[in-house]
Length: 588
Image 1 (cartoon, one colour):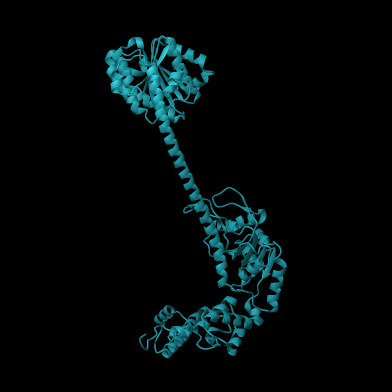
Image 2 (cartoon, helix red, strand yellow):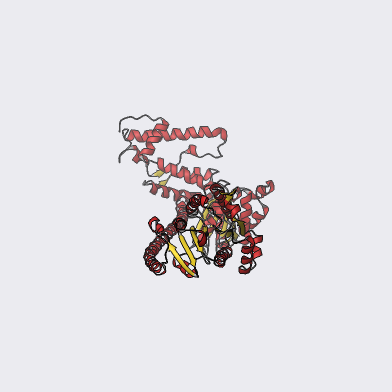
């Protein structure tokens, strides 16, 4: 039987195709019992739930005894309820009559229960010897409904019929309602393929030779179709693999582009910083001496100093003089990043780590690997990030936000702050252990008021730089301007000096550079005086613009216009004319 069944694509002992509905016509009880035991044994060994509806002449005891002999350790399957044996009369009949609704309901209940308990599939078998002729029509409708209910489900159904109890019409009905029909007569197995209604009406005859030929032809057809399908599947799989590789390549390039953009932005930022350290004062020489000593090492450096003293410039100088000069220099302004995002910015995050984390992202520490990371305004770090940073300093590893894998890091840390960290430790806003970790080699950058000797050199440097940028020719610097700069306190340090010189260059009309006296004061302007200073600056700016307009006869654009005279863009000058309420003398 097994060989013949396999020719049709069905194997009752090994793997059974899901969604198969077939039947067995038998002559002897031994043939019936052998087939059903083999069918159930294969299901149990495949971790499938088995239901056997027993009918006379078989008894529940017959089925149980046969299964125990054929299935090793059969009691184990009974204990975990992998196998259930019921009486066909109890399963199919209600008050002695066949009840289709009862059968369908019981069927669905068993299927749902088995699925909920995690079985790989369900095998059902039962004998139809108990049927009465008046129930036959209902039963055939039930068999038709089985074909629909098992389609696309992990389910197989084997029905058995005694040849002695059925005539030709009933046999034809059975063949019509099943995908496959099998007979055993006098020890010879026949497989009947139910190809359609017309064939099903033909009388059953012995078809061994003809059936074998049809099976060979059908197998050949299926082989051709299978080759085509296999080719199509392979092509689709190849296309999917190529598409997946393309997506991976896009993601890799996107990540690389992001990393390169971060590094590029760091280099671009240098344009807005000092291009080199300018000065020769003793205070600056002390700082330069410290840079020379600490740069070749990998020691952590803490740079302190007031706002605008050039702490980042000192950090870049350390990096450029170190063995890591060829690697990335990554800056992080801890004060400019929201506390909720600072950990993600420093250490990166995994996909789904928080709302908006649509993909994995590397943090600044990963981007700075083998190079230097500069943590500006480290005193502004939130407490939880201070703990994470302390771990990096101690263990040289970190975890991405939302991740659990420790990532080793080889990076030099340079930190900077304008805060009094010992005072912050005393107030509980900065960790003492973190302070001792970053304060390995402290460098204090002196304020500009302690570098008076460098002011003249800095003024000359910035005038040359911004004059070239504004395309203006400035050949000398007003002596009074240098005296004013020497006398001024410079609360904003070099950054303030830089901004004032840039502004003065923009407003300059001749080849002599000068700074408006009102812009500089011998003492820091207080809050009560800030409004008066603003008004003074605006009045002076208005006077300069009105003078340029008068000299250009009210013309703003063009080579002879006021914008060209002032070294400003036309749109910028238009905006300032409007804001200051300047009257136009003539049309442009």
